[in-house]
Image (cartoon, rainbow, N blue to C red; front, side):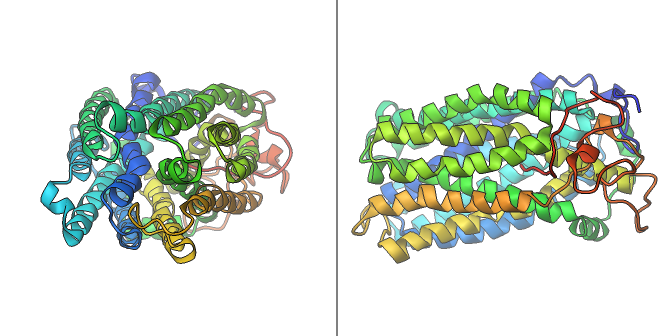
Length: 501
């Protein structure tokens, strides 16, 4: 098979080359900026500064996690079925960008009378935390679906994904690493929420502008409009019967939950465990993110040589082990050394997750004759977004085991509480993900497909699992990752494979 030809069952890349990988990828800066302010500072602002009880926070966050998981399939389904002069995905990107900006600003701008009322504060938190996450889901159901649809060849797709991840890491530098200093020393003062509110306004406006610029530069493939519209319950049934949904989805959920704990707890870890300042929190996060950016090119080179699946299986345990030094850190210097090890594994997962999930979406489109990337990604999101339950449980456990309830009632040993929260919990989640990953095989990369696994296996008929085409060796990645032409696409080593994100 020609290495430059799309896999059978997918549409040609020609109509979509008008979309720049750079313009598409930069959109992730806009999607990441406000939501990482939320993930990185919401716990600190509401529990530590405003005094919301940690158990109340955990309860709301659990409800928020369930609702967020349920709305994902709905948004993905609507996006897949939409046919308009603006395309399928653009209307939701535009709407979501405006709503996300407004709700992020409201979330961090709590009026004085509301902040003084325990009930009022809990209600305000619940309403705007949930609506902010819903807006984020609305955007990402469409934005994520565009990656496999706009760029059907894995090499071009990898370029777009590299831009995406680079844009995301820059957003992380600003929304995570710089936020403590900006909010507590530049735009506001220590112990006040004013700086966080001002940052929310800046981030919300910038985010909306970037997402809108990206959305109006996307050129969707009009040929996809001729495909049959997916039927909700039939599509959900087919997705749930796909083994990759459960295996890749579970690993993705473990990774997402681990990083959610880190994002939400790092400022508290620095404050209580290390006894550090806002500047210390910024320095630690900046080091981790900058090293992640630097390692991204290294991991990308490994992907080109060994394949995304092999690389992902390596990155997972590296990321898990990276959290061990964080448990033993006692000051900023030792925490930075631990953060370096976390950054190495985190960068590897960033370099591979989207590529692997995109392969699963390709196989689904080829098998069933319609692109329903939005719904499939949303189904993955159901598992991933349930990390809200993990976060809620982890936070509630601190109240149970360590007596930590809020900044005004921290319990006898908040330092140990957040030492466990930021190191042992993420380590355990990534170990679970590593174990599951060993049992997953992936469909081949798009330009490497060696058999028409779409048309050859009609929906509802028995046939070969993707990745088990004639010529592949059961249990070996050679048949899964390579095509029949040597050198066509990423090479892969021995073993079996998967990935996340």
